[in-house]
Image (cartoon, rainbow over all chains, first blue to last red; front, side, top):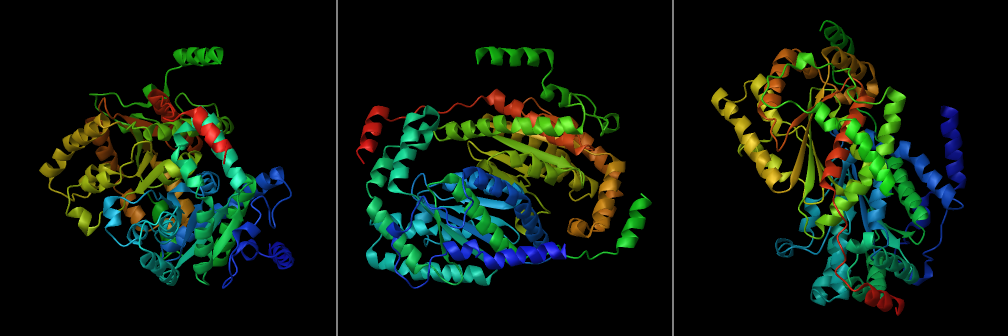
Length: 293
Length: 293
């Protein structure tokens, strides 16, 4: 066992962690066009290997999740929050299905954010997000998030510019406070190419079983592609902090996307290294009592 | 395709639906000691066959769930609510992990009910349950439920008896209103034997990785076994209605429990027969617009 762990650590030393490969550099301008959406950085060789590698991660993910949850029952406040952002069809829903599907659903708190309701608009933009946070021991998943308030809000001019510009610092403060409360925030931008989005939207149009996922408004949004890329660049640039960095996951290949996000979650959970809490009861006495029943 | 469906229907005709096998008869006294917790009614021959059969159900479950969700986007209000009840270690958590794990987690709304908080106690007992209901298109899962208010509440004399006795009719009225609003309520009692509970509690005591699941109070609860069996019998008897019958699932064998609940959910989803909604857009026009982008 010790030898195996040692071997694993040696391999890790020669191969950089995926989080270091995909992390957005801090304090630099981001040019998304320089990122190849079909790339597979540090990934398996091909689709078959990628699918197999993702499946192979499942037992470790489930085991770490159970430890995280178990630790919370003894007062450990740590938890993880996966934030998923990306253009339409970039695979937010697919990630929840294929990656979060590897976990025990009882420990996952998933929230898909839609256009805000009248009540939500009457509150500060972080209000509805705060209500959907994971509790200690849980894995929270945001399918869209508070970043919509600097993405569509910027592209569609939904709020006055000074108010919008203040939001980046508000988000950083909010995420810092989450980190201080034990939340590991993993922010993933699913980086899709303009061409791949066309292909995926066409699939929805051409397949009657996918019509419910499509509306002509999706084409209107697509027409704003350059503005969205700009808004994403700004969000990645201004909101990559030590406490909550952004990861750019190339998303044109679904198998790579699933593998990369599974691996990112694994690395973060391994860093937390949650432990089963010791029992606070007398084992021998409980054993004897049970045997008498 | 038609032939295959036809064959399936012929097989169903000769083999009764599991829901008819496990359903509690209406208007009869229930004697739980007459139910064998190790039985495998209408089930696969053994564990290997049971595990394989459960895995084989997964694609149909996932497909029906997607249709149910898709239908809700076009106004279909139907949804399903699985209510899980049973003694400690009867497998409520295991069911969520192994059965609900077969579904897309984004369409599942899981709630584990603990001892009520001060705020919850100040409201009618159905208040907290109402807040946790699934939305249209979702599959809701209650790990414990409003039935605790006629189970532990009866065994531990938590409320005056007249108030307790009124709750059965209140539950029936509540569940009828759910059915009228499109909720298919599937209530499962995980029927565990006294001996098997001892074995499972001993496993928790003997395995340090399971200590977090155990407290000496579990032995105190076990001492009240006959009172709980009586309370369950009354709940099954008084709250089996046309709208929301109880199913007794023998739970000593985990593979049978997982198969039976998967099969029950499948039968209920097949009866709903949700359909992908038709698109409300011009396919040819959207196709042409997309190809121009």
